Image 1 (cartoon, rainbow, N blue to C red):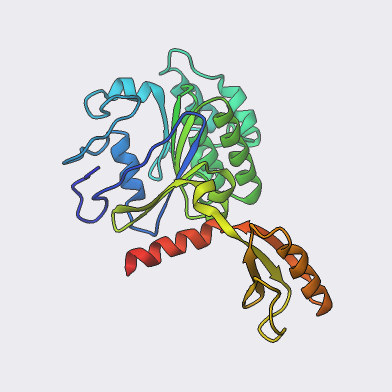
Image 2 (tube, rainbow, N blue to C red):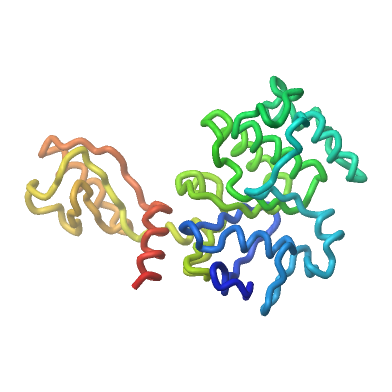
Length: 283
């Protein structure tokens, strides 16, 4: 997609199936929000193809909006209104809305349901906006940093709700700066930098590794020669995952040196994958 914005997105592409979560990652100014607003039809692309539900969102805004729930960073509510009031008002716009009281309960808004918007915390506002995005029972949810400014308890509520929605077959596109959060909830990841895609694919494929990585509680550089097939990097011992005996050799080697194992992994972290993608782009 070419969005015709010299300060934002020039070429971004990704795919997503129903029942999956796609997380768009990238540094500030990479074009994440611009991608979402163009997908929703709020921006007109100068070239390329943008489709949602098989429809052009600019040419068919009503049909697209009926099937799509959106929560954007610059969303807001008239200051005197409470969550209960704005949810009830928004529900009246849909032919078959969800029950607002169910969403108030599910998003832990009961204690502030009648509190004016201006007196809500950042997390309470975010959860209210998420409730509005869910009211129309959309098949696609587009969420721009849904846990921004939300406390840990509120994040747990939002994460669990996202899992429930994908289990119901909804497709979810979201952005976040929290890589650990993305790793918890994503099926697919798209990394963008300087307005274009630099990495995209299934999370499981992107983080798959042919190595087994053993993290120790101390620096291994002075521990001597590593076990056969292994190599040392700081406090980690790395070896071939396909060698069935390597793990036994490695743990015995560490035990002989009275070095404790902190973790064992056969995959890359999303953070390491993300950083390598951005480093490759900068080079």
